[in-house]
Amino acid sequence: MLAKLNPKNNLAHCFACGANFNTIDLLQAYGYPFLTAVALLEEWLDQHQVRPIRNKPAP
Image 1 (cartoon, one colour):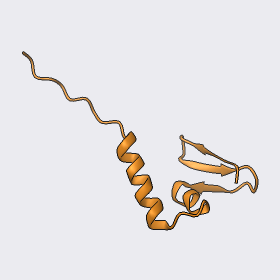
Image 2 (cartoon, one colour):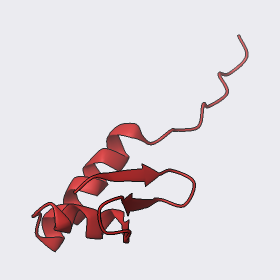
Image 3 (cartoon, rainbow, N blue to C red):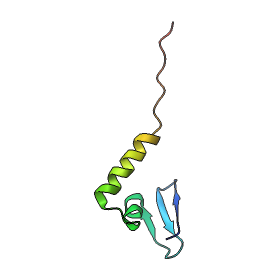
Image 4 (cartoon, helix red, strand yellow):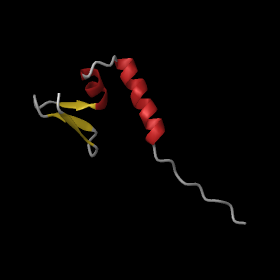
């Protein structure tokens, strides 16, 4: 499957069949079981999530 993920709508588009997949469906299409796909996405989110910068207290 040749697919490209669109970060604007979080869908992957398969150029071979024309289907659109959400991130869990995409991982399942690559053979991951549902719960494993969810856990993997959660891990990636934890690793790449932008965290707010807290203001440092004034000296």
